[in-house]
Image 1 (tube, rainbow, N blue to C red):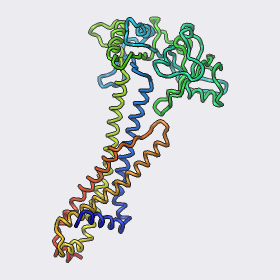
Image 2: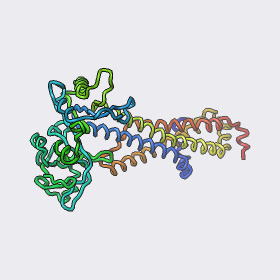
Image 3: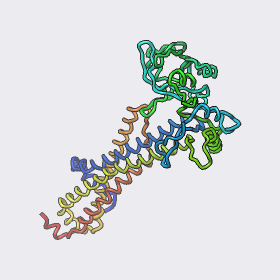
Length: 413
């Protein structure tokens, strides 16, 4: 009997027992659908994280107070943190020639109001180089200037999310007054939309001059008279010069903090590429983990196929004896039942592929920021494993069928 004839007989058997065939394939369907959906979501998360970090700016370096652990875990507090003096030192081209711009940030959550409208958001003090370094520009009005920083003026630039809450009717905000923690500010700019997510909404921000945040809103003066910062962003000249820029930044901050030769740094310098790589590795491991969990359903489905095939062998014992009596060889019986198991698994796999693809599309429609990515290698992997499961769990029933004695089989009631 040829392979095509075996496939035709297997499909005829599926059509004759539709409900039993469907229940047999259900485990495979769920397993393949789960693999496709979870791997698609995992890759979508990885793509989203990479895009989020790349959207922060170009050739970006992060100077963070404290020190990262050896496993890149939470920061260990160290020294007195970062100060305005560190920012000004890094902005000196004679000290750090491979950095083109440096931006400090210092901020806290605050309540922003306009009449009866209110928003709870992050208010961040920064410098005029913020748009260039963070690739985040105003689409209306202007950004504040060095004069505003020097004079601690009460001006603000709104992110899109805050603007929509304070100006729900779409009015032009430029020149309007708002209150930040009951302190009056004038809106001078509206930032472009960066896009929000459940992880971090970059549009949910109000930017003010650094000195205004440090002196008027959230007093940042330390006992030694220096003003503290949360983070410093540095833009390297090029991607090729990032390592050199990191070395220059490290030496400069060590000198500013009086860190001796043998002492550990009380700060951390991390490149944008390192952060993307670290998060990609985490999301990659998470994707594999999700795929393994989904693969358990395939094993359960395989066990279901084996059980049904054993039942089928028992039900068709007389048929097997009759076929052997008229000349069917052992390998013919073996291949007949093995092909049936494979057809069950593959049909279930194809149905699961459709269900998984539909699940990924549903998730894509429910989320504006997270877009699951259906990769062909994921599809091939899921179908390969469904076929492998059908083959593995179909071997034992097929061997049992092929091993039946034709005389005993014909006598079976």
